[in-house]
Image (cartoon, rainbow, N blue to C red; front, side):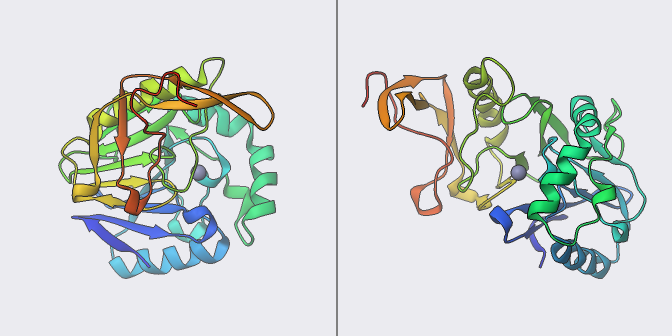
Length: 255
Ligand SMILES: [Zn+2]
């Protein structure tokens, strides 16, 4: 079922890793962001979209992981956009993505996975602005809908998905810290933050501020060592709804 979290912005939650599909009303129709996950979810989503009575004009993929590269014939033969990096990876890793999807998402049309077109420089039909970084995945794009006061965070700021460092290259932790700076700025003043997986944060649950996020590194299996400060920004979701990021301030030297 779609839940409207802001004017013309709806979210549907799937059971698999609490995945969120976001439906955005644009000037000419609907944009489906990261539709997923299993075939039954996509059918339900198509029913809900039909009920809105607004045509689907495009899709958008936040990043090139298989669970964000799905589509269904009922959404129509429309462009499915992502960053150029996303489109390139999705194309080159399509077989691998299909294999992973087949193992986790029954009933999906595998032949439609990963067909992504680079978003035009003017944004095409997608409203708002992209916040592009290489944390979590290369070419990852959050979507800031400032006029609706909504941030679509992709697979960042989740209360169910652990931060995944090192997926973008040699300095994954650094990439992650830099992305948190960008997202902390973007989330400021928003009424809703929608993660790719997990709880939609609203109102006072969004508390961007400056701090010292840290991770614990392991030098040997089973033995936690000192925390390491990563950067200068964090976004905290109150404990009642979970928190996405390690939030101990001043953690240098912490156990
Ligand atoms: Zn994901």
